[in-house]
Length: 135
Image (cartoon, rainbow, N blue to C red; front, side):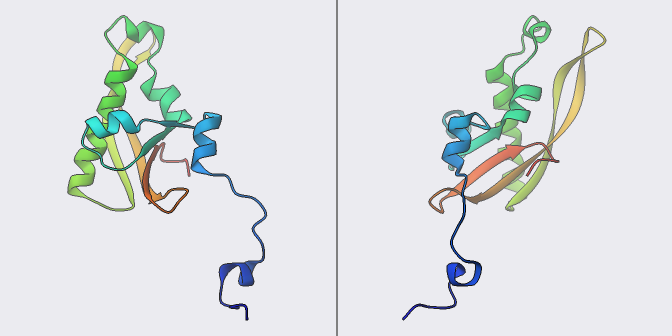
């Protein structure tokens, strides 16, 4: 006898699902778990391509000022972990400064990011760092 209280009984068969693994393979998310573990974060971490392109990957001019993907990514992961230790929640906002090019000169810009801790493809805890307007 089928249990009528199941999600499938209520909503019907699943039409389509897009997994975190597929998003990483497609380049929608960048898996940064390796460096996250170095920063003391225990769960898998991915960053959206928007965060990667806008904040992690410095423009050529900023490279000449000593900015690097590794350093900028470390800053994000460090500030996330620092915030998570103080304000653990499944949805967190945190801020950090980045050097950005404005009118041909490097300036410090305060950036707000969002981190969501939720279930991965197998229900395991995973972290996704994104811009505040991303889901």
